[in-house]
Image (cartoon, rainbow, N blue to C red; front, side):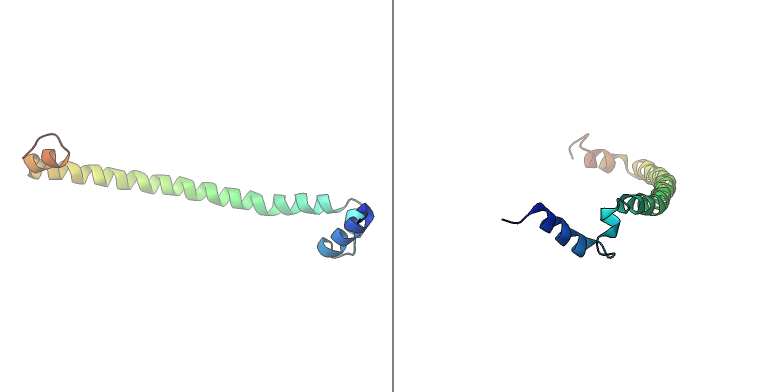
Length: 89
């Protein structure tokens, strides 16, 4: 049976480039939290900016589509009503 210490040593050798000193002295968690702070904060800010810009862009597209539907209905109201299932031709 493999001992717990042997598993920990194997884990340290595989995942810790310092040979186990970061994990042995509980330093690895601080590096991880700093890395998440440095990378996640800008990623969330960029994603929020893209969402806001995309929502504004979508607002313009929806207005253009509504205008196109209104103009199509004015041009030929019978076929438009038939298309939407309001009447049968």
